[in-house]
Image (tube, rainbow, N blue to C red; front, side, top):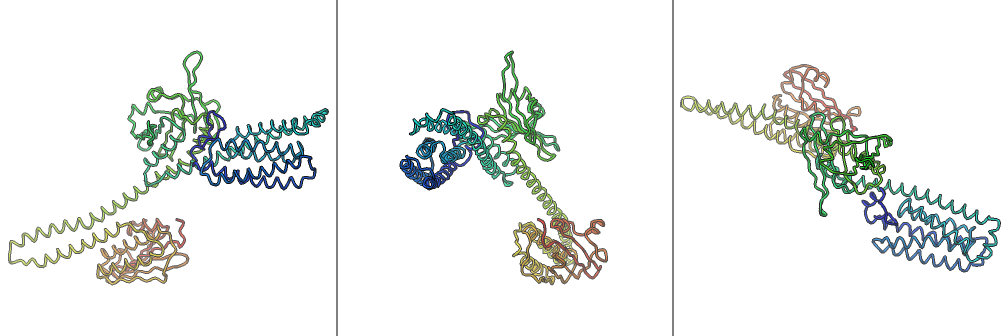
Length: 598
């Protein structure tokens, strides 16, 4: 989106605005056209009510009718066209500047209330472009106003009234007012457009930061966007892992064609780390090479701290190896820090769209405040997923080692005994084969349970109770143990994450009953008590090695109780309690809030 009236160096506003959708220009034109039509009709009505009737009132009415027709035609054009050219916008804007002067000439001259019509022209310039263009519009309007004052239809009477210089003073005051108004409107308009465009660019880049892509994919996506935004020929990102004392380099190179930038990731060896060793002078900085008249040169640096405050005496001197590896004359830098684990910097070499060093550094710093936390969240999410996967793999490995593998080893030993017994026809093998068959049946059931527990769950509050009832019924069918599920509710209000954890807790509890309790009857109840949900599993098996009731804190202190269930209960903010009567059964009870925080 072009924001300039003349050929010049692009401002930061232009750079950001170029990233906005092309339809933004047309949307602005439609808003201005609607305002122009409303203003034209209102002006005609105000002209009718004007108390001092000019002798050129007929011309004023004709002009207003023409202006209304002009406004309606412009509004129709911008409604039916998908885009507007720069020439179209400039032509319409030039006509808008002329209208206040013409209306004033044929109404009440310098005292015309339609002098304020210039406010619309200034607002249109501010919405279309920015500060410089609005001030230029104010200057043009001031010149036209002065011309209409001296060379209007009443030229003779106007020169006669200049004797006391009252008219000249009024023209000067009105001109100054118009220029001040132009500056204020242009400044506010440019700031508003800058903030809006920054928000649009930030939202688009943030949308590309997704945990599914991983940390590397998210970083590369952000670097591609930043490289395109600033037009840098090369972007460097160096990150140091303080925990592992390892450093990594991302290098983004602009493509020679219209394809995407090339992104390379390498781990730096000690020699390379010396080349890319850099102490950032602040939160963000812009440096440009300046030749000295005595020979040599250095980087003139504009530095901002992490709060955006400018440092006056900051000095930035890159390592000679960096200048040798990447020859550059201008650089835009940003300091990085992700928690206590990662630190580093970003360098955008020779950016084409950063003519104003301070504004470019300020925008890059503001952008990092939004993108940085998003990237760190991706890192934390991936790390949590990795840890959760490692815990689950360790649990599965433990289950396999303690269950299936041990049983298979025992089965191998029994088969070896059976082979030796087969050599003696007097020893029957049927009993041993029955034991082997029972062992195989048991391990098949163990494997089924393990596979069931590793399947992903996606339960909502409407499916939770049905799933609990199904799990209990499946347990009864698979094991032959009498099992029953009861609940006074048909539906619960819980987040999906909590529903999944409750389902896993019940699966683990039933698996423990089958493996260890030697129970004949199991009763599972889901109830509510004192603002808490309560899930209890009662069995009439052999119970635990202790007698009485132990809370979760007591279980932790004594290192008793099922570890997996305790971890899952903690994850939903609940409490676990175990009751045991050795030889007569046990009760597992979990309680958790009806309105959890997560």
